[in-house]
Length: 233
Ligand SMILES: Nc1ncnc2c1ncn2[C@@H]1O[C@H](COP(=O)(O)OP(=O)(O)OP(=O)(O)O)[C@@H](O)[C@H]1O
Image (cartoon, rainbow, N blue to C red; front, side, top):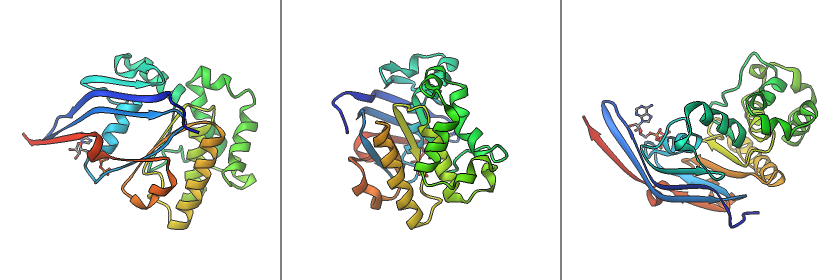
C-alpha cells in the first residue's frame, strides 16, 4: 500500500556521459512514494538505465540531489555508497547477474554479506531463502543447484529472491522480464508484486513494454520527467 512518505526523490539532477557523442540527462523533479509500484517507460536511448544507475549510486549526479530513504546518495563516498546500496536497494537486472557456479542459496544470501542491518533482519537466512524460493515457485531441490543450471525463468526468480531478502525498502528492476516469454513474464510479475506487497517494498521497474502498465500503481514516461540532450563531439 503506497504511503505519503517518499522513499525516493530526485531534484534538479543532471548527469552527463562524455564520449564520442555526449549525452546529458536532466531530471528536475521525480519522486516515488513508499510502497508504490512504478513502471518507468521510455524509448531505447532515452536514459532509463542512466536514471537507475543514478538512483543506485553506481554513477553520481553532477548536479542536484538523489535522495533514497532520507539520504542524499550523491554526497556519500564511493565506499559508503556501495554499502548504502547493499543495505537499502534490491536489484534485478535484465541479465540477472547471478554467480553461475555458486548455488542458488549462496546467490540469494549474497547481498546480506555486505549489509549488516539487512543481515540482522534475517535471523535464519537459510530458512528465509527457502521460504522466498517456495513463494516464488522455485522447486524445493533448486536451493543446492548451481544457479547456471536453472532455466531462464527460474534464474529470474532467484534474482528476485536475492533482491527481496532482508526486506530492502526499494527494489529496482531494469527490464527484468525481457528475457522471458509472455506467460512466464506474467507469472513472474505477479509473484514479484505479491512479494513486494508482502514485504512492503517499493518497486521501480524500467521497461519498453507499455502492455505491463495496468499492473502498476503508476506509470511514468521518461519524456514527462526528464530532458535529454545529445551532442556529437
Ligand atoms: N557507459 C556509458 N558511457 C558513455 N555513454 C553512455 C554510457 N551508458 C549510456 N550512455 C549514453 O547514454 C544514453 C542513454 O543510455 P541508457 O542506457 O541510459 O538508455 P536506455 O533508455 O536505458 O536505453 P535502452 O532501453 O536501449 O537500454 C546512450 O545513448 C549513450 O549515449
